[in-house]
Image 1 (tube, rainbow, N blue to C red):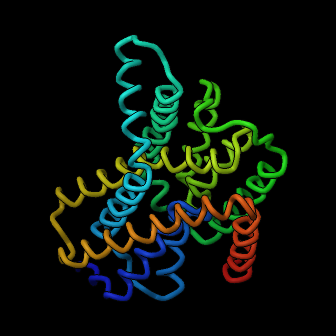
Image 2 (cartoon, rainbow, N blue to C red):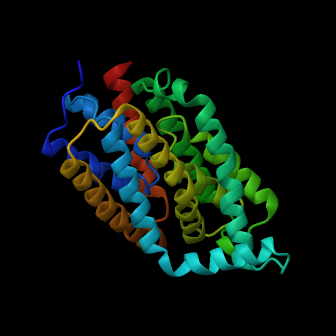
Image 3 (cartoon, rainbow, N blue to C red):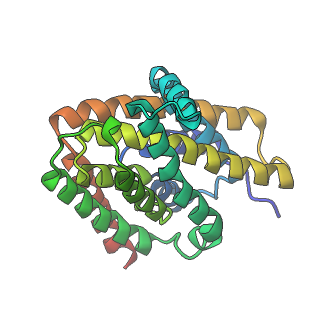
Length: 270
């Protein structure tokens, strides 16, 4: 029996949640698991997950539209042996930072979607990686921007992003943590995390859309389009909000939120 189609309220709420939490360091996967569970909603299905990924991808592409052409241009120049500029180096860092997570996602997808989708796992990762983010925010030298990447930096970020497959870790949170530990400024770590989201979000959305193509659409077109638009708008606003907040408050508000959420999950499910 096919799962019931999400209601209009569910689509709007989950698209807002996806758009906000995809870029803030608080874990989108955790919230997309917890919100339906706490509200008693049915699983929203692949069509809506794919649409929301398309929306957040559009948000980051639009926000960084002026940065993407220099990155693409200089990446192409480096492939032709014409030197490695700061833009080219950053483009290579994004590419190398994506590969391990993409491979791990393909190999571990079933485990992530079954065994690890539990409130207990989310509670542990929410608190643990929240404390690690706080530590990185306190001890990081914060002297470099994202254009100063070295190869060892890219390797560290690549390993960090692969960890984000576990719900509750937060892809943006763990990559910002890695960036801060490497000495990036808060804004630099955040911008690099956002750029790093482009290929991985495209891969995740493409994988979901491929599965939909194999099984056939399961949701109305107007509802999936709505999910994409709402996720895109909320994602764009989340990027702008985070970059402004980091200048005055740092990572502390997000760490506090993660600790409170983790404490609630422990009280509710342990």
